[in-house]
Image (cartoon, rainbow, N blue to C red; front, side):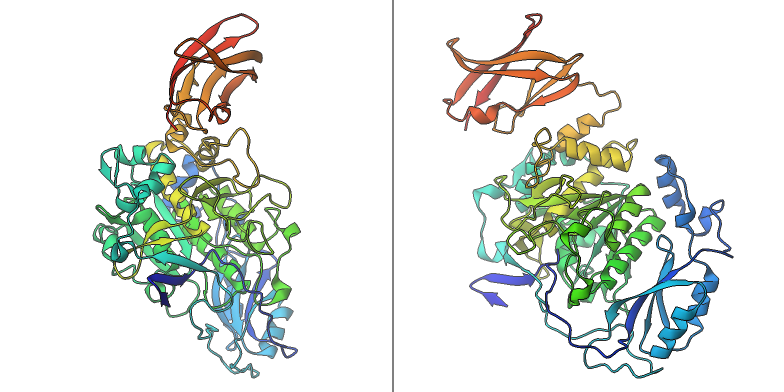
Length: 583
């Protein structure tokens, strides 16, 4: 629908539908998750991991000293074969990590046969047959369960997009040149996290594989902004876990927008944060409705990412409420380890994958908190800010139910330049788009520091946040600074013992970097060029690396040059630095 130059498109950091399902018969066919009791009589062994994991997957683990364990073994083929032997049952996929399989059946007697199998521990109904399809006993039905609906049905949130090229909506905030590089409309997004420096130095994610778990990638195989990926073989592959007949490029455009934040390259218009990475496009989300099957699809997508050797997962998806209220989660269950998808994210992280996930767009809804897997221990969850640095009104709040800081960090998420499906540039709203900002830049950071492991990359990004020393449940640890994150990852990094202010000219977010051998009291003083003391603060330096942010109290200063002096109260030793205030 187009109104006054605005294009309304469905958002897929999914605000999940609250529609109740219609009354069901005692047996409702559809998709079921079948959990197995064990992995007995399996031909697979952790001593021969190359039988079920790629060489690249094994190399990723080896580089991070992560061993293959029992959870990595595929389910027993005999169990899968037993399910497949039933003509009224279709096996969609199996899971190594959860030791189970997703099956479809419309037959009650087939369901009874499944539940009676000795190796079956439990069976969960994860998606019903859509209305209009019968579930007659032992009669095969369409295994996709697809229900034709217009995009945006089931209460999905809509993003407001502007066609920048058509409307010439080019404001000063989208300055095209950053550090001499023409980033087009992406300049402000990348500059906000100081990512332009890494990109200008040639770190574009080369050698890293990013698995994008999403709802579809409409026209990604046709758009010119992605031609460099296709021409160089850096679309590593695709997989559709939603439909039996793959529909990666003919389904939702949401993944197209998400991918463009990381990978688009059109000089003077768009620049992704990792244009030279390799991408796997994995469809796990069905945009027409919401059932728990999508969590298991996410699990299957994450396992695929693990097995093919992906370094990073970007997931602009989340789960709290479903079309069937009995599947809904409560806030107390978002403790990082209870939901299906949180467990899957944790297992991916444990295997050396950096999982980057959008925090959610729930802040203005009754459910105002993050979704899952953003709550998980394994995920680096990303909230959304305006380009000014203020929180985007829709960006979900933390904490997790067990009181951990969430979201972890923030990035540009309102009016983010993306590639639309008409070869244009548009602005999109949502944490769906702040997540790939960070995921792509993480690939560039990891390329620069190949000796780092996933947890070190995640830690450096969090510690580089402009609110790292005073995190909260609104901004998390703040907006990362990827130049500072890179410094934290240096092999021989030693925080400066001399006084360092960054950035300078100062802003309210400027910090003083200081290393101290012991706990000590210091006095921070600011003098104008006439030598007049205009500001003073007592502070306790802790042993180790300190970052102090005293400049939020100096907005009333006149613009100009100042001197800052830090004096150790015990010894009288002092350091001096010059700074410029220009705001």
